[in-house]
Structure formats: C-alpha cells, structure tokens
Image 1: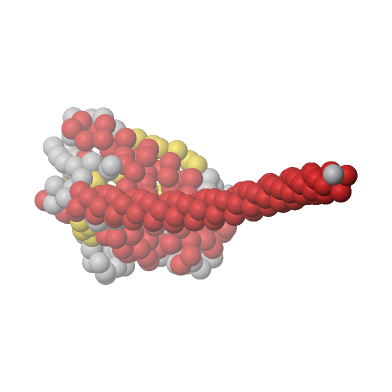
Image 2: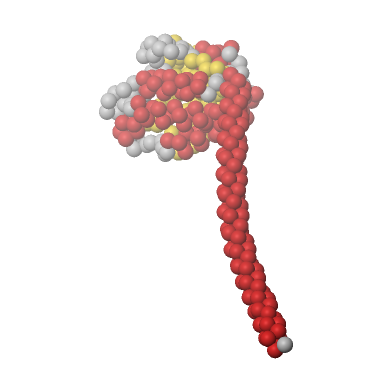
Length: 300
C-alpha cells in the first residue's frame, strides 16, 4: 500500500513537473514569438519606410520631370508668342513708310527756290554743307554714312524705308526732297545733318521741327511729337550734349512737306572732339541705332 502511494506521489510529481516545464516552455516560445513578431514588425516598418521613401522620391522625380516638361512647354509657348508678336510688329511696321534724307551733296547749286508755297523769299537749292575743322571731311559724307546705317536698322525692324538719294553726287533741292516724302505718303521724314559754328567750342546735338504756320499746321503736332521722342532716344543712347528741340519756320524742306518731318543735327564738325567722333564708323553706328530706336518708339 505504501509502495502504491509512493508510486502515485511520484507520478503526480512528474505530472506537476511536466506541466510546469510545459508551461515554461510555452511561455518561452510565446515570448520568442512575441520578440520575433516585434522584430518582424520593426523590419516591416523599416521596409515600409524605405518603400515609402522610394515612392516619394519617385513621385518627386516624376513631379520634377513634369514640372520641367511644363516649364519647357511654357517656354516654348512664350517663345512662340514672342515670335508671333515680333512678326506682327514687323507686319505692322511694313505698312509704315520712313523717308531718310541725307543732307547736302558733293555738287552745289546756286539755283534758287521758294522757301515756302506762296513765299517771296528765295533760298539757294544746295549751298553745300559743313566740313570738319581738322580733317575737312565734308558733311554730306557723314550724313550719307549715318543714313545708310539707319536704313538697314529700320528695314530690319520691318519698316518700308525710302532714301531721297543714295549717292553723294545726287543734288536735290529741298522742295524735291520734300516731294519724295509727300509722294510716298511717309509716316515720317527724317533729314540727316551735322552742324557747324564759328565758335569751335560749341558742341552737341539738336532736333529741328517745323513751327506752327499756315503751311505746316497739318503736320506741326506730329512732327514735334516725333521729334521729341526720337531726340530723347538719341541723347540717351549716344550721350552727347543736349541742345534741345528747336522749332524753325525758315526750312524749305519743312514748309513744303505734307507729312511729318524732322531734322537732326548730330553734332558739330566745327568742334574738334565731335569731329573726331562723327567721322568714325563706330560712332556713326551709335547715331544710327539711337535714331532707329527713337523712330521705332515714335511710330508705335
């Protein structure tokens, strides 16, 4: 009996120990599972984070690529708009006529013509122009050089450009010069000249425009308006001494004109410093550009 009790007690102890060991083992496995789950979860989080970062980076690249694409498209659109605008401006300018009148000629004429329609005052057709104080460069050479450059620049801007003459040996009276502008129904006639003075210290540029008289009344306002705009551009571009816009009633070319007309005096050949500039191609380029920009601004 005692032996049976011992056996039962031993069995019960084994059962209890087995249960404890099972529970310990179960808890251990559950703990390991829990730890593994935590590790797996952390790894998944890291993987998800990496995946999300990759997706965000990819999305950013796609967005940037689309932005670049949009920018390129926008630039292309803007460029096309600029091209169209430039073409429209050229087409618009093509309908505008500018007559360039290079002053004086290599041939003089003492033949006379009326200063204005109905006037009793007579003036010499071509008395000859100024000349350089040191180089003796004739004014007509400087005038033609700037006029030719101005024609090129205005033509590039789309204007229809007419020259009253293309050679220095061509002698035209001022009535004939005015007739070229009238016959072409010019939007503007610009007469190109250089100045002279007995006082060699005098320097600078000026713009001559018609006075408001019975002959020039129809063109007075526009002539003065255009003259002021062109002259302001010239002074700003070139930077010479500003002698202002001057109204004149004694200019034959003004009094016979039926279209807006201005006359620019680009500087004094009687002044050594300005003479040195006026005879150089680089300065003639600057003068032509200043005048072209001014004319373009005036006729917009």
